[in-house]
Image (cartoon, rainbow, N blue to C red):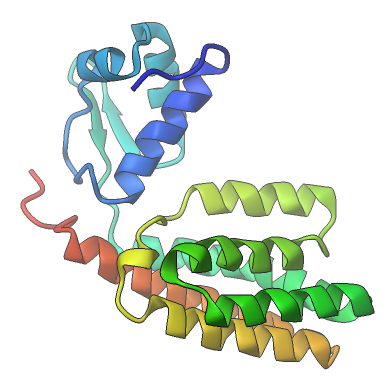
Length: 216
C-alpha cells in the first residue's frame, strides 16, 4: 500500500489507528517501523511523528530505546470513549430537536426509512448520513470535536456483527422521534443511550477478534 505525499504523518496516524481500533494489532504488540515504511512506501521520519501522536492519544506506549507498543486498552476504556462521544453527540441531538426546520426533519426521516430497507453494505453509508445530518445542528467547533472523537473509537466492524443493524434502527428511531417531537431532553438521552450501546457492541466485537487474548 502506497499513500499520497503530503501530510504523511497524518496518513500514517490514520492507518495505524485504524489497525489498532479494528483489532488488527493487539495490546502489547510492538510497532514494526521498518515494516510500516515498506508497506506504505514512506521514510522513518513521518512514522516517528505518527507514533508520537498515537502515544498522545493513548493508543501506544512509547519506551525510550525499546520502541512503541500498542497500549493495553480495556473494555471499559472502549465503552467510556463511546460514552464521552455520546455526551457531545447527545448535546448536538438536543440542538437538532430545538432548531431543525421542517425540511431537515423530513430529510432525516427519509434517511432513516432508507436505512431500514437497506442492505448491510448500504446501511453503513446511511447510518453515517443519519448521524452527519444530526451533527449539522452543531456549531463548527463542536462538529470538529465530534469528528475527532469519532476517529478515536473502534469502528469499521459493525457490518460484520450480527444484529448491528436492528439495534441501530431502534436507536435511530428513538432519536428521530425525539427530534420530530422537538423534545431536546429525549433526543439527548436517546443519542447518549444509542452510543453507549454502540460502545458495548464495539467492545464485544473487539473481544471476538481476540483483542484481549495473549497480549504479551
